[in-house]
Image (tube, rainbow, N blue to C red; front, side):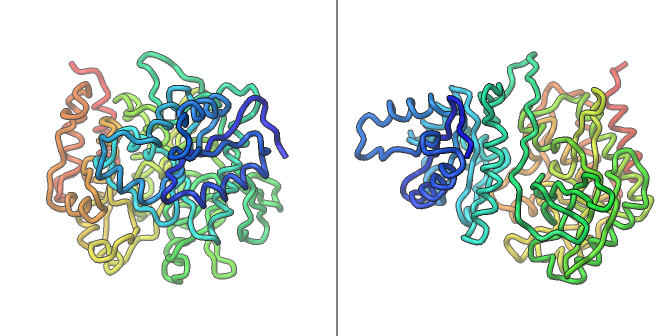
Length: 461
């Protein structure tokens, strides 16, 4: 059992819908970190000086786990500007520079960020741990414990860093150590030993693993979710990656194997030590134009190579771009090639809640309508990503995925300069062209888009 030196973990929750999960989580954390290192929220109704007790617990803690249940979210959406005890605790944790880890309970549906107070919206804009039903409880808790164990090393300065605070302009923050996730007990194909969970993508979790025959570290993605049981989806998943494996490009992760075993499809690829573009955006709020051009022009180059090989990515978003610091230079890697959806699967977007074949925030109108995507569909998604990175918000922010999809079909995106007035004007024109509703009005190739992006970064005149 690990005992933390002058550090602790504080569990913050709303009693109405989180009392039992909070107690169960506290037991799991105490088993790992010790009874004296885990503090649980007090009963504010019976404890008159609860603020003092909360402040004392926070002063003894390095990390705060915020449990987010359905009734609390519903009340926040209804009374967004009213005082709230949990929000007080979160604000106190931010003021003290604590590491904050949000955890949603069960099948919580998170409302649109616009419907929530800004502090809670910012909290939910980072990676969120999801505690599901009993069979999914322990794996998520193990990952949470692994992250905490990595962050709460005695004397590590990063334990005083909160992931939802923004850096002051002109300052440089030390890069925090990459968390080493807890060992997970999941199925692995023959010849591979899974050691930890690296990240979750739409079509399956990506694990750090060791390929035993060659004794090398790899990233192993295992197709999961409802689509994993569909033989057609598995074949498309493997076919996509087999084609990508034949492409040699500096911005595509080399693929070692794409195969099926025991009815499960998996892909083994080179392990990249980096973070997603989503994490970069959350930490920075919004990225400067030069960084956007440098990173997304590399993504466009990778797309151009894939398109020449006959592959449409189909799910360009911030999670599917990894950024690695290689010799002081940022290199972007395009990942997450999705099994190309059939016409019927695409149409399900408009009739089934929760159908996820691509990311609604960046999905091209023709794909929403059930038409097969082509390279220009990826360009539309890239245009939405440029808008998101430069402004810090999505081009179509709506309360539900369905409303977002309908906006992609029918609404014009807001002007880039409305939310990023400091961005060079060339970027506004680039986004306008890339996000045209009609594919024939967009950049016609990824190479064209990359050239336009690099030109936009050049000094005017």
